[in-house]
Image (cartoon, rainbow, N blue to C red; front, side, top):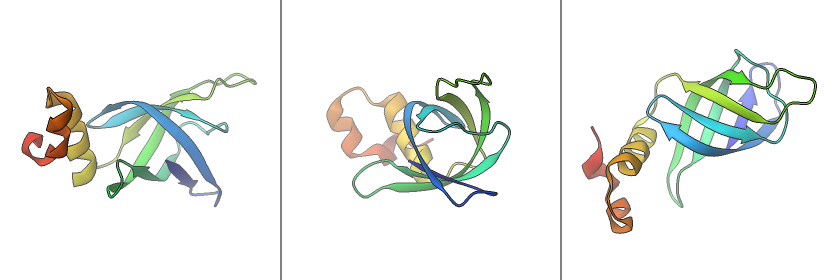
Length: 104
C-alpha cells in the first residue's frame, strides 16, 4: 500500500492488519502526520487495486512513533467494499473466489 500526501510527493509503504468498510489500521514505515488526507492505493489481490482517500486519525504522537495508525476512508470504492464484505461474510477459503456474492 502506498500513500501520497498533498504536501509531499513521496510514496510511503504501509502494511494493513485490520480492515472495515470505512477504515483500516496499519503500520507505516515512516511517521505520518495526523488529520491529513492521503491518496491511497491498496493492492487487494493480483488484479484488484483500490484507489481511496484516507484520513490519518490516530497514531503515536511521541518523538519515537511506533508506526501504528488508524485511518478513516472517504468513500470506499467498489473493490474495497467487495473485499471487506468477502472477509466478513465468507466461511471457507473457497468463498473468497467469488467475493461479489457477499457485497451488501
